[in-house]
Image (cartoon, rainbow, N blue to C red):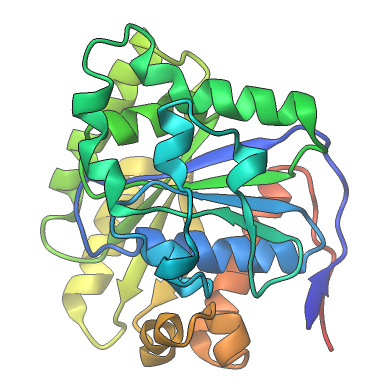
Length: 276
């Protein structure tokens, strides 16, 4: 359907998409960024860590087909290779999620290694199988053990940030958590980028919030901005990323631009976009 020319970098990039606020576009960004990067010819694995399982649903994985899930990985019952599933997108696999994740903290309460379950599972995956170029982890809207596992396993964090009044307040709280994780669990964790989402150019507040975030975070804010777009909202109900639902809409083009920006930042430089 589409592709980028790119320069290969063999290191797996593991990104946690996290924000303790709900409704900011974490899941939407996870599945659409994953789709766009896969369309560039890179191999991508999405790990759905949100008990709601919306990333799984948005990639066409029916709830009845999820015999095992990310819960089984975090409890050590299964390996990623045993659970990952193909999606409607070539080069893109997913570890689905189920509501079982809601009970994870109680199950792992007395486990001294409870914060490193996902990290160990990914390390085992990379030893046993061909490495993915990207692993994208969709986090729940809270700073709980599940999110801590994601941050402990990742080498970068992508922060979707809705252009609303309290955006900077929420960002500050998340940055404190990232600093804590870096100091205690994962010294290599970095902010890969802050992504401005649900931007409405007709709304003066959106413009002001975008300016404030860029003033605060500088070049850590992606140049790409994701606009409010009804086609992006509709696509998951059809079990598709927006690029497979409506390739030409502004939402699709925004996520293609974001993928190009991420690939370039990671030295997998996209030279062009080919539509076919």
